[in-house]
Image 1 (cartoon, rainbow, N blue to C red):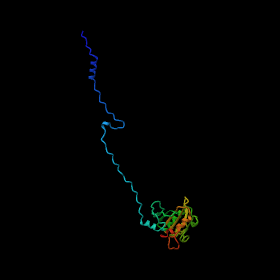
Image 2: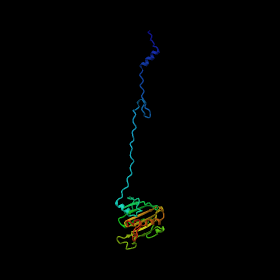
Image 3: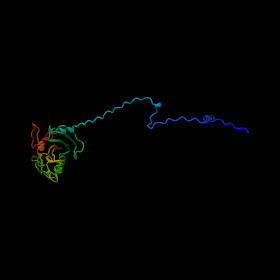
Image 4: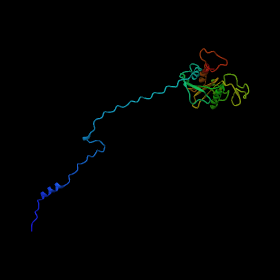
Length: 237
């Protein structure tokens, strides 16, 4: 019987290694941050220059129309200071308006409103006075009592049904009036009608007589008409 020859163990191990499959090349696993590996670093890129956006410029104030300038010109010169058109939140039936800010510690602002007729201006005035509890021909602004008075004759003249008269609660009144009251914050206010113009003066203080005196004050060297209009509107009365 033929004997089988046994190869040495070392030769068998070499043969096994020769027939085994080669190990695959390990893949490059990207870092969690997504940064490229050092071997594949990108070419340096220049930092982009930011684009500077100019700040938006403020819109210039609206130019005053010739009619609005006429309202300014109707005021006493010391009241016609730092004026600008007012085109929103106007009283009912007002056509145009301006607002001024005189350089006077008594005054916060002066609003001037134009209407189609003197009766429309007077209606606005009387409603404002009634809103603050001021009765017709009541009070005394010179003595710090809220009140109203006409500065031209006309109260009680004619019938309230007559065409063209100013009818307030079935009474005939002169449409040219002036008065005073304190607003809900306690600050003095005066109100004036001069023809088709209604003027509201908001005071910076609480003294009615001082603000009323300022509103009535006549311009220097003014010719005094009879009846004498409130000085604030002497140029337009």
